[in-house]
Length: 112
Image (cartoon, rainbow, N blue to C red; front, side, top):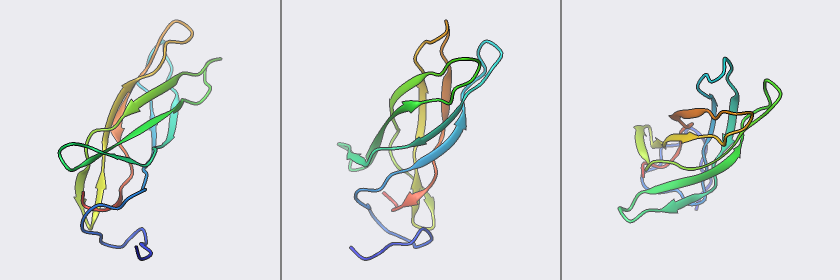
């Protein structure tokens, strides 16, 4: 495959790409955690789209952190040859509580 720049229009599927995201958890016990994430490469789904697995932890805050494991939703074309994924998950329970996280990751090349 030819070299693909971050601003190149790509029609179709780009293998071995990933997505990053920067988000915050929902407020629980009066605080939030920042969540910096990079997904694993894509896993093809039965409908011809793909999803991404991710796992990690939210940043240390209020004397603790939380871990998470999650799968994204399918690819969502956003124009200019790029796509994103919706994600939503609950962190582990630590320090007597957990946090909800949801959002859209950063665009990656490919319309599928």
